Length: 187
Image 1 (cartoon, rainbow, N blue to C red):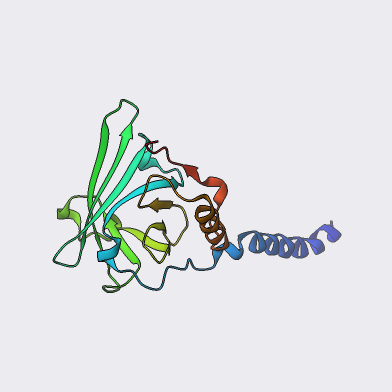
Image 2 (image 1 turned 90 degrees about the horizontal axis):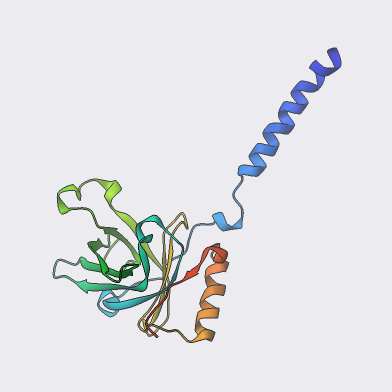
């Protein structure tokens, strides 16, 4: 019994060390990096969803998903997301985005809840542009926890070489590319 009691502290220390190691962040836990700056006027317009991490608020979408951004005079952005449901009808979600860190920040916050509750921080979701080509034709959007990812393009299809290069950059940012699901777009 004395031997068991003597080894308890060592076992407890070993268990705590194991838990600390299991909970220790890996390379994916590095902070997510955004693009250096975003020109909202160039970013405005319609984007086609090429792929995404599945999420509950798009469960009813079967494809043909777009996001349209329109700059407002007050510096914010109107957001209209559309997708096709299984029954053939379109699902439309209208929201607003803002740049809390300034007019060139790639870190936006988006809200789809009614304006009356906009004072509540939890109704705003992070929308970080983490990759964008120089021509503003292929983009990747995520958020700090990497739970969500959208790959967006100005056209319904993307050059395979550009897409593969983007996927490599996203994987280097610690995003789990195994979760990525292609979005059906018009042929």
